[in-house]
Length: 255
Image 1: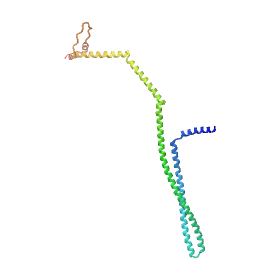
Image 2: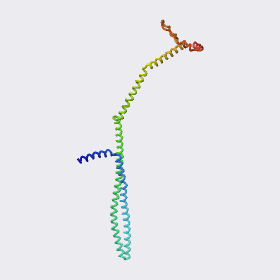
Image 3: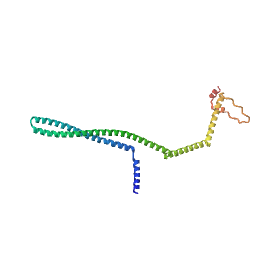
Image 4: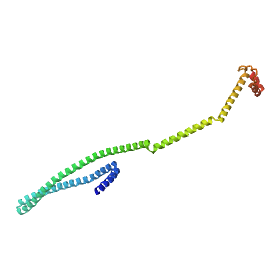
């Protein structure tokens, strides 16, 4: 039972951690951690190199002391001071022992310094390589995220609420347009519209009759046809035109 519970907890928290992991943030943090190690590595290399420099100065000092003791020994021997020469010899031997020890340390420090510099340079190269790789991975991650967002948007247009909204609005607009067309058709086929058409036709006929009367008066129209027996005589529109014209207008019309 306990194993099953632990497995359940691992599954739950493992899923949460996996969903919460952002590759871009993790890669950026890794690069920052690697960069933070560079100053410490430079400090270690500087310490190794400082030890090497100190040993170099110590060796130079010991070599100078040994040279001085050698001159002092020779001077004491020339003066017959063997006791003083013996003391200088003992001191010089100690300096020689220290010189050998310093030279051995110097050799080890030189190797350590070279290795530290090589390791530091190799680490910096790896850092640059990891940085380039991280930038590429971050770009791929961003491109993948944009593709996921685009695919989700396309899926929402196909299957989501937005698609249903567009369909609903399209149907509503279609129903409204159909209703407006039906009302317009009903308005144009009513009695009022027919009366308007008749009045327009009557006005057009009256204008044509008046135009014909002017043409007849000016001798530009054909004579009126002989009325048929039994037909209702029609009033010539020229009479109305003559009534509307004054004397001077009549004279000009006859001319």
